[in-house]
Amino acid sequence: MRSKKKRTDRVALLLGLLCLVLVVIVGVDIWNNHKDKKERSAQKTASEETSEVIALPEEMMESESSQESESAESSEGSSATEESSEESSEESSEESSQESSEESSEESSEESEEEKEREPEPWNLTLVNRWNPLPEDYEIPEFTELRDNNSIDSRAYPELQAMFDQMRSEGYLPRITESYRTHEDQVAMMDYYIQSYLDQGYSEEEAKEMAEDYVAVPGTSEHELGLAVDISTADYEAQAPEVIWEWMAAHSYEYGYILRYPEDKTGITGYAYEAWHFRYVGKEAAKEIFEQGVCLEEYLDRIDATPEEIAAAQQEQSEGEG
Image (cartoon, rainbow, N blue to C red; front, side):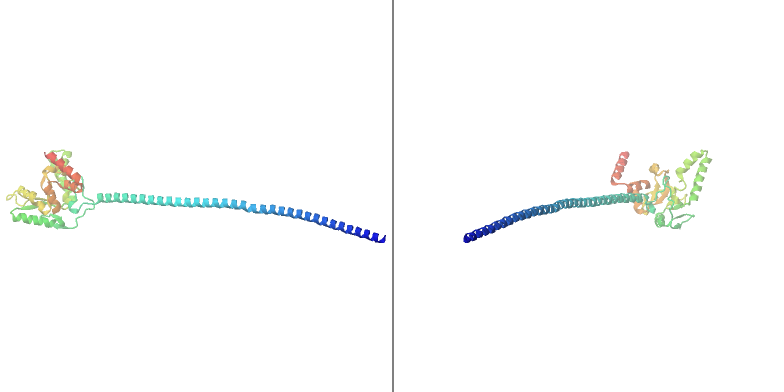
């Protein structure tokens, strides 16, 4: 019996141990399952948190990328604006420079034309008549005294003397009756002629008009230039003045003198024909005036005219003669 009881106790002990083992195994399994769930839950939470952390930089990157893009576009726009501004500035500068250059060229051209208009004729070609008074600043640098209280601009004297020497060598008897006159002398002469016509019964207006046909209004006389001389004969009984004037009309140009008031140019010169009045203009001009058959006014117009204007004037003159 005792042996049977011992076996029964052993079996119970084994069963108790087996149950304990099972309990332990089940408990361990339950613990492991709980642990696994906890770990998976933790991993899921960590994964979600990680995902959120990664997503944030992407949004920021997109934002930053957008900002960079906008900044780049703004920079490009600014650069384009600067380039456009520079180009516009350069174009404006070029246009301004071109306009300035054109304006400067036009101003220079206008100034050149004004200077040309203001530029006086050479002293020997100074035009003085009733429409062109003696220049206010005109001065005669030096006079040469002649016989009978006459005088002349020293620059015109050598040729005058050479001409008189030639005439005398050919038997002519020239004499200067009038030469340089002061303004006061011219006034006195004008008054004398006006009075002489008044004495003949003409009205004051008529006397003045008739006097101005032969005497220049003070300030408009070539005698005030010091380049004009009135020539006659030294001996009226031996030689008539017409003989002197005929030689002078044919040869005075050879010495730089011209018949200043030709008979067929009174409408241009403004004065009646004066066979005795000769004016120094220089040999070159005198030769051209003589050969062309013009007066000083016409000559000065021609040297200032274009070739087309000269041709037209010559054709008009030819048609008038025809």
